[in-house]
Each structure stands twice: as structure tokens, then as C-alpha cells.
Length: 94
Image 1 (tube, helix red, strand yellow):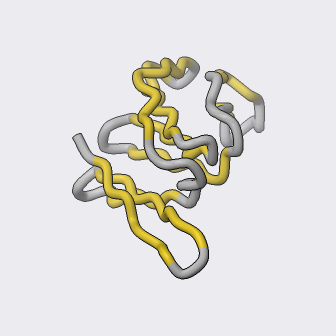
Image 2 (image 1 turned 120 degrees about the vertical axis):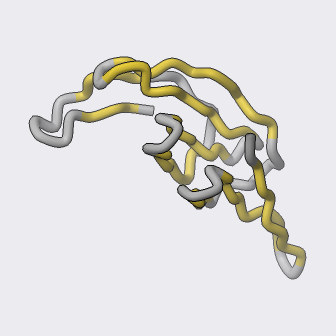
């Protein structure tokens, strides 16, 4: 996962994430960045400063659960999981 300066376009920080990334979201209320990975994990990184990210957790989810959404009021993340006619939404919070 890369953190980019939106003014200059320069990459200012990177952290390793899992395989098969589909989406990333940033929660400004918690300063946490989330990367949903098709291998069945979510990488959670904290923005320590404008130029530093630190991985705080690799959350085990479900293989193939890649599409991610954030509720910035509750700070919950939502992942779509399943295949064929069987789908579910995984919800994770503090």
C-alpha cells in the first residue's frame, strides 16, 4: 500500500499488504488505512504522520472477500464475500 502526497504525486510511505488486493479505504477519524486482499485478509495500517504508515494488524477474513466499504461514523468496514448464489457481507469493527 502506498501513501501519496496529493499535491506533488510523490510516494511518501509504503507498507506490505496481502495478495489479490481489490480495494483500499482510509478512515480520517481513526487515521487507519485498510487494504482488502483476496487471499482472505485485510491489512490495517495507521498513519503515524503525513509521511509514515505502520501496519498494526493483518485481519483474517474470508478468501475472496475483497470489495470493501467504510462507514466513517461507526468506523466499521464491510466486505462482500461469497460466490454464485451465496453471498454475504462481513462486518468488522473495533
